[in-house]
Length: 197
Image (cartoon, rainbow, N blue to C red; front, side, top):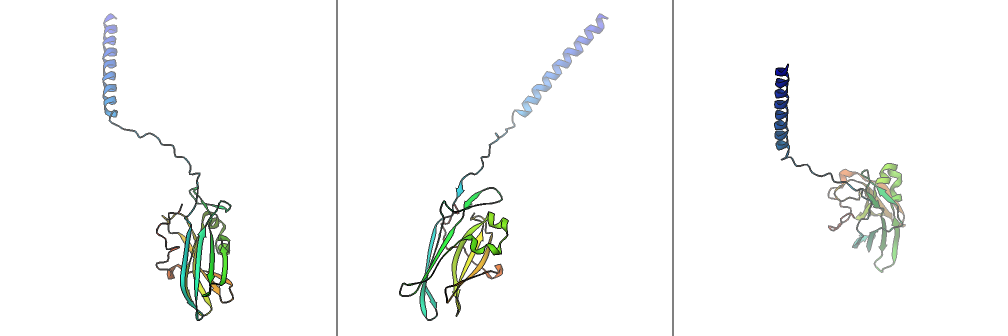
């Protein structure tokens, strides 16, 4: 019986020795693994604003005279907020358009908001997007043509819905959805510094 106890003690001791060696080897294998610390991602709680832009087209030839169109995009804290699918928030924009005659008198003046285009857009799109811009796009015998857009305020995306905005001889506004295929090279505003915040 003593032999068996001694033998059992030898086996137990050798098993303990082997287990310690394996533990040391395992520790050596894992000592070279670097685990990046988990970074807690804070939600973006800032309400972003797009840059203010003021563009004037000086020489619009129309109906035998020269007109000037000033388009001013701006925002303020009283405007509603659009929230995109990531939860990022943007303040909505307003665009004031003033068209003057050659003598400086005002032919047309209006402040456009996203609501101008809401009948063409579904509710979710309206909640997630803002009024981006209005740019002069030519004339015909009856109308001044502008291109408007509602879309993503983040300049890294180019998602927007375009609109034809017509100003009639009587100073009335007519809006229709534009065809994307006919908008090669269209830019919301000619401003390289527009950073979208």
